[in-house]
Image (cartoon, one colour):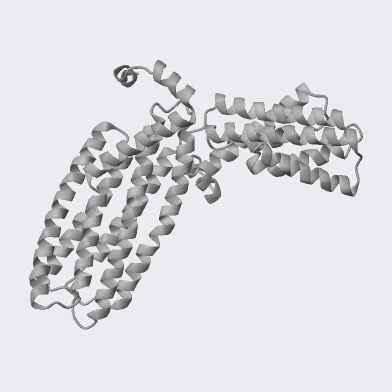
Length: 406
């Protein structure tokens, strides 16, 4: 069997990534829109249709609908402005400048968004020809054909739900946090050089970049859940992942504080261990429980079924209980040491407070309360934003038992 080239093998492995799927879908939609425009119009090269389809077909169905409506809106606004100008003035330097300024102002008025420049471009192209009305109609028709093909393409071939990449990114973030906690708990009874403690602090600070990457993946997942017929409970899925990321983001800031405290402690104790042997042993076990707590929390957030989520919740509860017991043991040992030798007592107290914050943020009951609050907030916002649509959904909503069976 011949060897497969490395680029081809890599493309096959990445065939389900958003960039690859988007490239294939956009290419197919643009080609189909060009064929449709050739068949429906008498234009020799209706390139505006594939251009519109290329811009309309997005990674998610929600983005496709919003970008398509905005694109058509901007083109129609620009064509309207150009037709009005062509009936009043000709093309000159001052009329062109006035046309651009007017088109940009109209673009803001019609809320063209990212397509504000498209209003001015459409107006300039139409004003620059002799038969402005004919070109205006052709430009609008090509735009409508491209947008229609893009809409139809995404409705017939519904974009995939990008929840799995977001879940993988969330689990990867939790894995990095777990490794950091294990590193922080390595040999606290031995001498810790300041440069090693500072390196762990930098590792904790780099988690901010990971948070940004997970947030981008989560935004894409949230858009893919909107208006997608494949998803039964889109709001619940969005809220579960978003609240999970919010909790991990708070935990990363607490981890930075923990790393900062241990670095300061290493600076003050350069010729001796950070902690005595009994405290170090208890602290190492405590960091191990915290590491497993973070991992189980991420597994709970990304569990696809109720059975696996219940199992993850049980493991999380056990680790939380063990972590709280370990924290009490460390606090008892540190209290006895501080009474005899009160050196850097504020740093040891800060470490205990930061561990308390981690345990509190990852608590199962607190997560349930946060989920309920976020669901209520989303429901209130939807009711206030679209009261009539909300009332219709409430009236025709199926009972919970029937929805579950379906």
